[in-house]
Image (cartoon, rainbow, N blue to C red; front, side, top):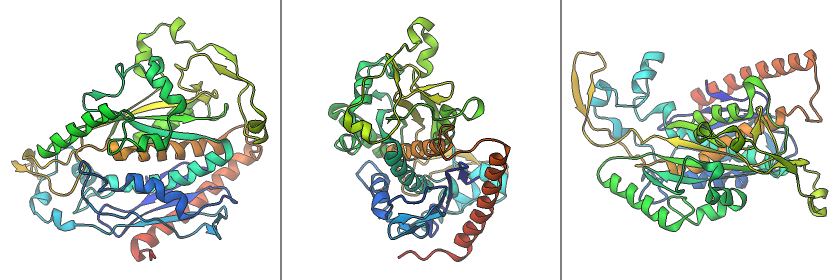
Length: 425
């Protein structure tokens, strides 16, 4: 499916070498100040061609709001965002061997098996170009979260290959260096450490050198991105199947090239004892008068440690939420690789073509932030303490009716985009 969420719902459309990447946001509250200027900064952080260690594809990635706002204010109706593709080069895929052999570790074979057809240039819907829509929608969700809860979302590169920011990368919740960053790190500070976005100059330079080395060898590498969500009020999320961490994992694991997700103590927690892992509750410090006047909800309690990663029982406890995402090495490398013919009659040699990143994590930072915002937007709107939320069967039926109506409207809009195109000015 190309949609995620029910109350705050995002539907994406577009291919790597098509006319544009688009998304429809349904469920954004009315009365939110919103213009392209609120969305563009995150797209600029994701755009290609930022440095010598990213793809040379030259895209401006300028977003246009086509519906859902009037005079810079949201109407509560579906918001259509479009970003044109301006530097497509389908000729890079003109070699007929691409039609003969599936590229190793790409979606060519699986898409063909499922749909009976695949994009002839690039990865189509499996391309990371699709994540433009996630970043754009995430910027909208993030603005709503900031104004409603003062929520802050900051991500950064924590490893490239075997080069790690923290000495013990497997122990986020017990590492003093990480815990210090979790309290104070800002997005502006992360971007002071370009091109890698690792908040340590020396380690960042080592990461950059490693990526450049592999680029020159026509190879690639993976890495990890760590994300921190601050000022999350207690009570967001649901028990059982819609737990907050499950929602975050759902969104983040849908990002192309993601291979792993862990939050709080993560896999390191499996090595701890209960007496060390339990997070004792303590009274939260008193709020100053300025914070009290904001009307933003705050928890009466906090925990002395945060091995839970800000989530207990699938519901936020008011502490910072933090998680780490593992990205695999990009599959498109220009080395000769052995692969089979589509018809299974033999094998051959294929060297992938096109313009690609030797490591995705520097540009994945705003993508992870975007998905974190989208999934928290969904949970913020779903919060059981929301004063506008009714209870009972009638509410469930109305939600189902609205969801079905949205799906029908989105299908019509996506078909229009696919068959008629959207004029981008």
